[in-house]
Amino acid sequence: MRGYRALVLALALLVVGVQVVSVGRSQGFAAPDKVLILSTTISGGISSTEANEAAAKGFAVDIVDPTAWSALTPAQFSSYRAIVLGDPTCSGAYSAAAATATATTWEPLLNGNVII
Image 1 (cartoon, rainbow, N blue to C red):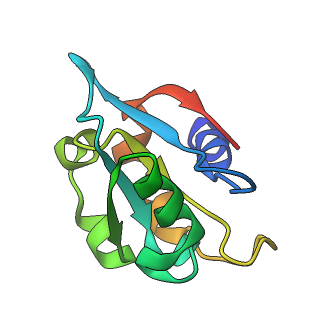
Image 2 (cartoon, rainbow, N blue to C red; image 1 turned 60 degrees about the vertical axis):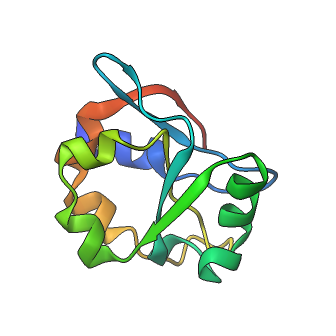
Image 3 (tube, rainbow, N blue to C red; image 1 turned 45 degrees about the horizontal axis):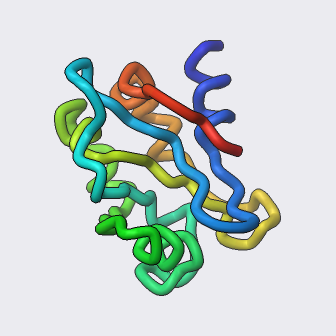
């Protein structure tokens, strides 16, 4: 149940600005200039609202598909300052299946604010 609650918290609905889940390392925060976005949770790829807002705030943006997301290791997730899971149609009709399936990999790394 903990994993499900964390996933629900991690699903960020973007209304204004970039809303993120902070990911940290045990030795401090990850590099402050990188944001990871799951491609199936946004519309428009690098031109999406989420990616544009992150870039405008000075973040480098990595958008990965579900296959690449599923292959990420804890160390790779830790290299990001934030994870962004958007809502591409503002209707909840999107696929965060890769995030759900790998929650045990990235959930323990959550450190900081969770914004929905």
